[in-house]
Length: 138
Image 1 (cartoon, rainbow, N blue to C red):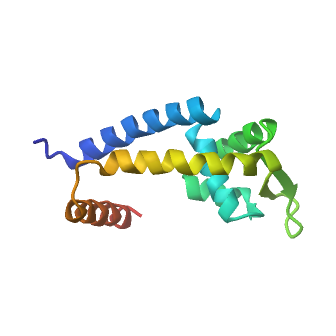
Image 2: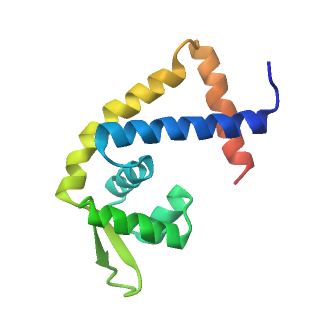
């Protein structure tokens, strides 16, 4: 079995992202990045646009473009920040809120696909490994 962990993690992430992005587009009509943004905004209603960028690992131009597309798609509303007129606060629109219940079954199915054929003990090791990877590369 291949033990080049960096290579394997990178390739697995790419393939998984492409697959999930395709599923999100097909089933929801939005990219996986837009879905991730909606989930973040739902948990952080009224949060700053730069906080969304930090959470998704996007630079300022990318998050600006993402928010513009989402606003055009009717998923979010951007409102000026009262404390800083240069900043924008993000809110889900009614249409964005209507998409959220459709997201959870898709995420449940994706998690089930990832966990298939693994025992609980094996999944514990995978979770511990991936958590350590994230901690080590902060």
